[in-house]
Length: 130
Image (cartoon, rainbow, N blue to C red; front, top):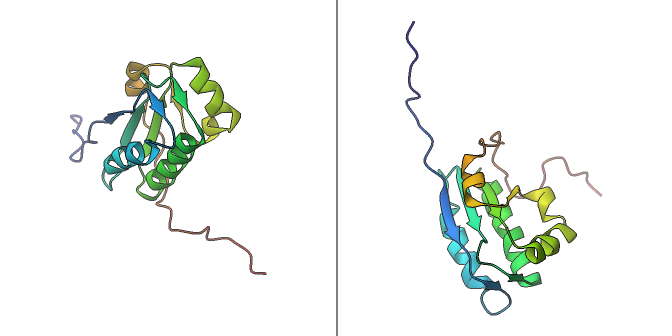
């Protein structure tokens, strides 16, 4: 029997370049740009922070919101963070536990897709009542 090609190939990853500094002044704009790629049907979005040398709490909050939006849409969000200072800030708040972080765009592109999880629907389903 001959191999059969997948009739529904995955769309290619989308790479969104983020600015050199992500702070209160531009985190909203950067988040909108990243969020516009996190649409239903997108399988992988790469937030390219190659140029980013500074990311404050506004930028970190934006990445957490993007992670939540990605989870709702069943999209894998990957970060590219070559800057030691930015990586240190992100790992201090455990972003690396939420999102895979790669040192280069080529490594983020080459990584195999993560297993797809069921779509998140608002609050956790197994919350206990008070």
